[in-house]
Image 1 (spheres, rainbow, N blue to C red):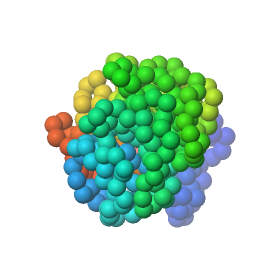
Image 2: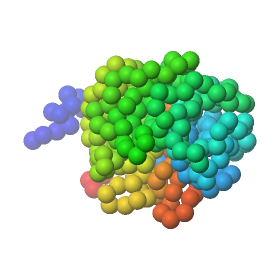
Image 3: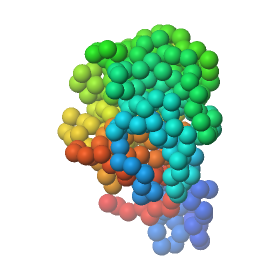
Length: 319
């Protein structure tokens, strides 16, 4: 007969009281009444509503120090989030939507986008209070997404002219350089991570895909496939601990699904309260992030949700 000891090489412990959840993660024990374990649990909760209803904005930073800038309807507004409330920051130099951003609340970067005059090659740097024009990208593009920091970032995919692109550019804090093209021309992809360990997910090629693209600062490789094809979703975290949420799938244009990546494979986890696409978030962490605004199908949203992962005690049952 297969037993716990046969599988794991040790017996289940008897503990008179449950240990702290964080200390006991991954263990199994009997407390005289129940068999217990400690596991990671992720959940979404409502955050403070954004000051305006919008989609296609840039979002970056952390759950308690986030930046949201630009967006549709077309504007130059910037807002800071401190984990409980939004306050106004300095306006972008150019009103735009379909842009992306990387970095921190006091050292951010946005690039590309759409304006009434067409697609943009502009980049702007943020110091926590005001935006400064940086050097232009080599290609005017919208819907490009990136990974990294203000002084070391990568931007890939998007739309140049009227076509999806696989062009990739790196920013060193001063100038943009064209580097190795991504494997597939794509828009609707989302990115996070760093310049030398970036992760980009999903998108339209033109069909929606489950692909995970990994960038090491020089070359592109493919990681584990997502549980479902996604485009126009949001992403956060690193190459070995990432999160994707919401977006458009082949089944729906306003998904609530969330999936977590461990560097090898994706696992479906907690659903959001409100399905939407063309949102953005705080991209620094997979264990504490934000979902900001987006398109509800129909109509734009000002809803903000906070995702937090914690370690919790769980009673083991036979169901």
